[in-house]
Amino acid sequence: MPPKSVADGSAPAQHDAQPASTSSKLFAVPAPIKSVFDRFPLVTYQSEDVPLSRTGRSERNRLFVFIDPADAKKGAPSFNPQCLKWQSYLKFVGIDFDLVSSNNHASPTGALPFLHPALPAASLDPIPSNKIQKWAIEQVHCEEEQQLNMRFDVYMSLLEHRIRTAWLYQLYLNERNFTEVARKRYIDPSTTNSAVQTALALQLQHAARDELLKQSDFINVSDLEADAGDAFQALSNLLGDGEFFFGRDQPGLFDASVFAYTHLILEENLKWKSNPLAILLSQHKNLVQHQQKLFEKYF
Image (cartoon, rainbow, N blue to C red; front, side):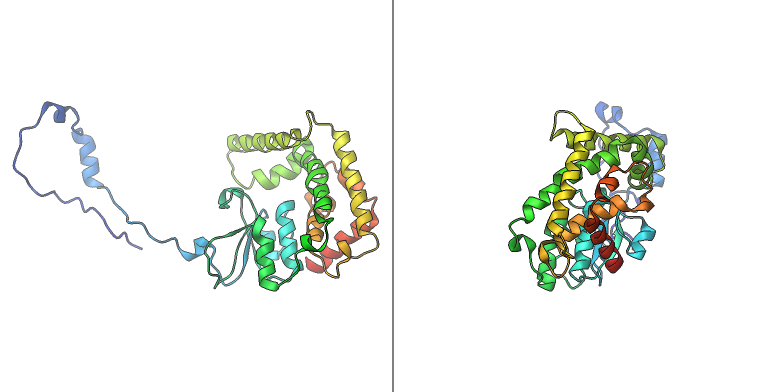
């Protein structure tokens, strides 16, 4: 689209001549520079609306996640637990959507995932992850698990603290895993500049270390793994012989939350160099079967 307003460089209207002051001569633009601007005059553009394609408006729901673009086209699981949690949940409740490969800088909240609902949704605003469940309930009238079982928050804390902290260490602070798993997925695709890659790597590892130090004055790997092992045991006891958590007939948000970690821990394609969490998880056959069933049915 051509600009709506362009300065054409024509001479300004003439006014009565005035003697040039000393100050105006001091701040006069040198002739060589003035000639350049005379040849390439200032162009002023009026503000225009953002194209619909950039707002995420589409005839289909679109979930923006960490994922390789080729995997996004296939609907493969995201390699990020938070993204995979909501990707799985939407699948479990029967909401159709397209995956879009993205990053935190593209998110209006600074974090992934976020969702752009399909047309004709009333609002142009994207839906952040903490509102996806509410939106999904409104679309398909599914049940909200927090209201069904008072133990939901207790067991969710096992995932968000004990298992997540062990995950952060294994992915970001184990150097072999960071180089082969995290760096190849979070850093290398974002830039080819080695200096920027190094800076991003340091930022990621520093953020992970700070997160772990919020819970303890120092990082004890043995304690992290022991806590994760206890959490897997508790989750295994909770699931028991059931197919899904809390005795549900269909998988829900808690199943998605567990699957987001168990799948990635057991995912061989991530090419883990050291994976003590998989050893701990594999001791609980029902959790492994839970992961396998959900993957086979929904992915």
